Each structure stands twice: as structure tokens, then as C-alpha cells.
Amino acid sequence: MKISLVFVFLLTICLTGFTQPEFAPIGAEWYYSQYESFMPPMANYIKHVCIKDSIIAGKRVKVIQKTKYKYGGVSVSLGFEYLYQSGDTISYWKSGEFHVLYNFSLSKGDSILLYSEMPNGCLDKTHYGWSKIDSVYSTSVNNHPLKAYFSIHKEGSVWGFDGWPIIEKIGSADYLLPQNAFCGIMDGQPQIGILRCYTDPELGTFYYEKLTCDTITTYPDGFTETNRNSSIKLYPNPVVDELIIECDDPWGNFNIDIFDLSGNPVNSHTFCPGERINLSYLRQGLYPIIIYNKNKLYYNGIIYKK
Image (cartoon, rainbow, N blue to C red; front, side, top):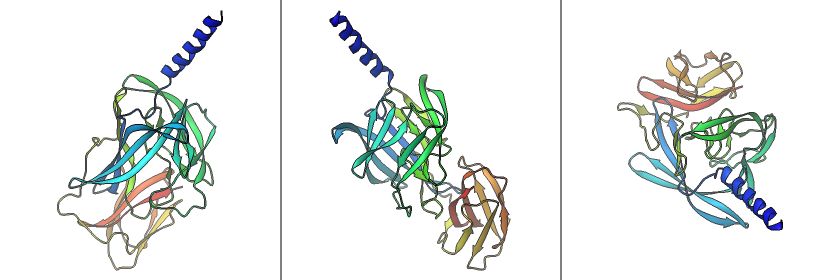
């Protein structure tokens, strides 16, 4: 009788292990765009690869190597990330401890405490922020049934994956780690995201963005970049109803294009500096914006619509 109970117990453990999808198996690859400009398009890409297992603080972790690829065959090492899986929970190692990254056992309305370190540095007083599970659903990727959810940051917190699906085995369609919606994305600096594709030996290749995995897009011929954002002010940002654009130079008339994060135009017209632009009709979220005149790009950044 004891032998039978032990056998059933071991069998249960084995079956449970088989039903739990492995996050970041060795050989898994993530490709993310890094936007220098949205229109005209110019994007490098950042590749994440799970290269091996290792041990940190007594836990077996996945070692993720990060590399940025730029035009002309240039590659830049961005270091490593370390992921740890315990059941439905994925954590990552930062600042000497493990922090929860994803949790696929949560239900709608549950909260998760996120931790993040932006690569360009933030002025926030804390690296922690609460994110709330907005919806939970099931999806299928290459005939593999997977759990997924959406989350939104709680009031007073900026860390999160707002508006992007988080999929079992794959992670966030925005970026692997939490992003700060208000730090470093509205000053014309290169922006990370969105996920182009994910691939691993079991799941195969999953395409999220229209670009192929390793495409590098560049400015078209004849388009000249100026000293971007040097004399242009956009405010308020975040914007509620009206966006005001000012500059220190006597430009005359210029063109403004505003896009959603899928690249679809939501506002495009000619304007004069000091003009108020009505954006009350836009939904809450992030919107790339460029200002140009003929073939010269004068401003490239992102606004946040409350």
C-alpha cells in the first residue's frame, strides 16, 4: 500500500511538471525593435537569447544574453538578465534579489508588485510599483494552448506593461522587463519595443510585429536629420485635451504627424509654433510624434495621453 501511494505521489509530480510550460528554454530568442524614429521609420533591433542554465542564490536560473544590432553590421553587447521559474511565477534577478516579473496564476483584479531599472536612469523615488491584472484569457500559439493576461499600472505607479498582452512562455509583447511609461520615452531617446518575434525549439516561431525578426530599417534617401528636439517644447506631457508646441526659432509652418503604437496615423496636419492641437478624442496611451519640414526631421518623441 505504501509503495502504491509513493508511486501515485511521484506520478502526480511528474504529470504536473509536464503540464507546466517552461519559460525561456535554452535556445529561446526574443527580438525587439529599438526605435530611433517612427516616421520615417528607423529601427535597430535587440536580440535576447537564453544561452545556458546557472545558479544564483541557490536557484537554477536561465541566463539571457542581450545584444543590440545596428545598421552596417554593428553589434553592441547589452549584458545579461537572469530569469527564475517557480510554477506559474517568473522572477528575475536585480540588485541582489529576485523580483516577480510575471504570474500566470493570478485572476482579474489581483495585483502584482513590479520592480524595474530603466537603462537610461529614472528620477523616480522608488523602483517598485503595483500593477493590477485587468483581464485573463487563453490563447493558442502554433497550436500550443497558453495562458495570457493584460495588466495596468495602479494610480501612483508607473511601472508595468500597460496595454500589452503577457503570454505564457513568451512574456510581454512590449518588452521582457517592466517599462516606465513616463521616464525616458518622451525626450527623443531611442525606444525599446515592440516584440517582433519569439522562437524556441518547442513552440516554434511566433510573430507579433509586422517586421521580420532581424530587419534593420533606415531613413530613406534624401531625408536629413537635424539637431532633434534642441529648440522644441511640447506641453503638457502627459496631455489631457490640448497639446501646445513651441520653439525658440522662427520656423514658419511645419508638419506634425502623430501615430499609435502600431504605426497608424491619428493626427496629421500643418501647424504654426504656439498652436494648440486638440487631442481630446484620443484614448489613453502612448503616441509617437514627429515634427518635420520637407525632408528635415526636427522632433521625434512620444506623448502620453491621459
